[in-house]
Image 1 (cartoon, rainbow, N blue to C red):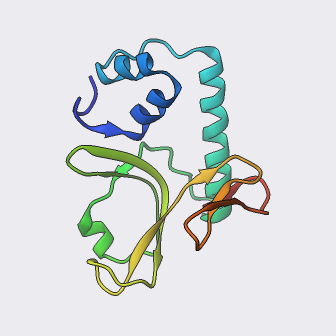
Image 2: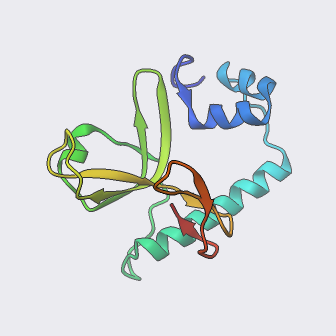
Length: 147
């Protein structure tokens, strides 16, 4: 059964964009067996995520890479002012989402003299990037970018 049937998650929203019936089944907790294509895409996405994490957040060679599910990010953790946090989950009363990473920025907020920006790992060669005018444009960076 889902965490809370009234919570809209990023997984549920993605399912809705692909197929309304699929989203309805997921909201009811009936996920079924993933198709081979979905398994393939999931494994590719996980491999890409691990590759980007290794590039952006290098660990010593002896340190194992964590493969844990996303940890729930709370205000107390954010107030500590850590430079980067990766593989986190945020939640409000009726919304929940997984975030690949958050990074500390020098912009005042309710947390103090800093805030965080979300980083999403994108597998497109030229992902759309929001410019200062509120519109999106294509980035000139290569594959394995973060935005």
